[in-house]
Image (cartoon, rainbow, N blue to C red; front, side, top):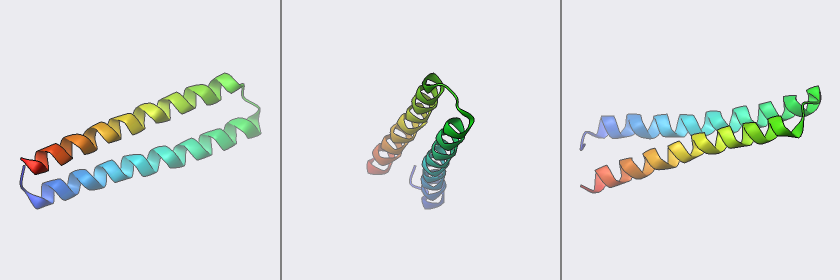
Length: 69
């Protein structure tokens, strides 16, 4: 994978996933507090965001390793 356009596209996708996850996390926690949802829901939201961020880190590491080869 040495195509610069392909690498840039994957970098943008990873950045968009991170940005989207953080934005949705903030909005979801704000709405959860405003609607009086139980703390279990906030914990579920946190776990979902952590899973998405874990995926983003995994993909970034795969991209980094592919660029080194």
